Image 1 (cartoon, rainbow, N blue to C red):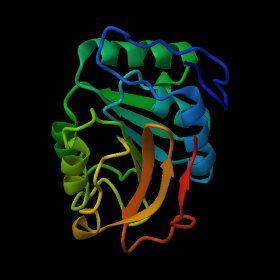
Image 2: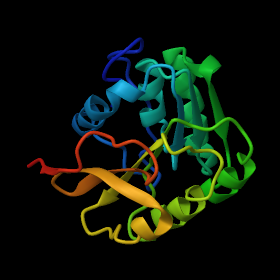
Image 3: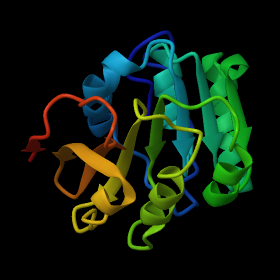
Image 4: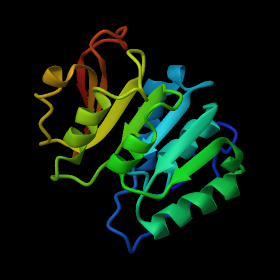
Length: 197
């Protein structure tokens, strides 16, 4: 796994193979950031269920002003720190070594994030719980974009009831990226569903 583009382009990133993590592949990561690129320069980025930190580090490399990483596993959090130091991006980041739901409560009242990414374990509805909290949270605004990585069977039919609009779905062979924003926010591109095989 490596940084795809930006100031840390081509630098390799460490992962923790012994943990039950699913690093986003370089190909999928590149597709994600090609879609998201316009919002990254100068943004505040939040990487939830951060794993090795590859997504937040990619955002920093591509011009994010700050990235916060939430990861409760101590070994994974240590891996994020190593990757940040190796890519020389640590000075624009913070790691919260706690679970996502405690972190979201902790961050209430702080400066809002422009971009939020989450890649929770599949099949546990953790993304649903996180979105429920974000729906009423001060850490995002109506202009913030949230991207959830989920398997293809994950149900997001509740999103509208939580006050979110699904702006785009990018589907791959086994998983998808779901782009959401609070309904009062401006539209993010078109709402078409695309599929990649």
